[in-house]
Image (cartoon, rainbow, N blue to C red; front, top):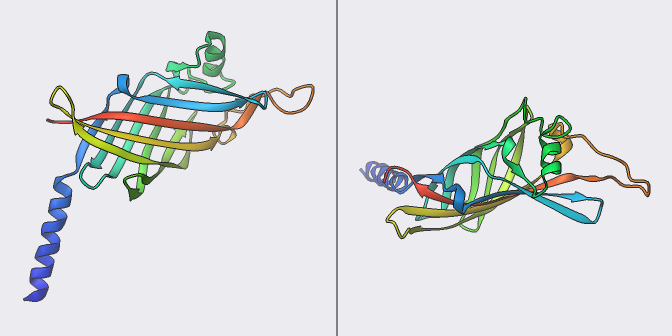
Length: 195
């Protein structure tokens, strides 16, 4: 009898936890997908992607994330310098003509609140590798227009050579024009689906 009650209680708790999970879609005008890479050893070049979609399954009560997926249009890269952006879209770097999108699909999630790690596959220029996005569930509120909104932030560091972005030039004094490591940072405001 006790065992039956325990199983029933566990089942009800599980259903209650699932009931608070919600699906959120990114609100791009209130979000940012940014990258930073070292240039000439001492300067950081930053850029953003302006065209992307993302969906996050999350529990706003417990501040947990169940899953996340995103697709970013490579052609939307913007470093505030047209010549550099055109070079980044070229076969030297992203090869946007042949690989117009990069994507992320989570595989597992650890932690909650301000200490969340999403492990998932990042596909860039035809290569897929697992990355760990470390970040936080910043909170959830009802927006001024009556829709539920949630905030998320995360970042990871990748080696661009792992994804075939191998262009570089050697400086006369030694060193390289572009650094190997790229920091990717996300600050996301998302709207709950199906309200």
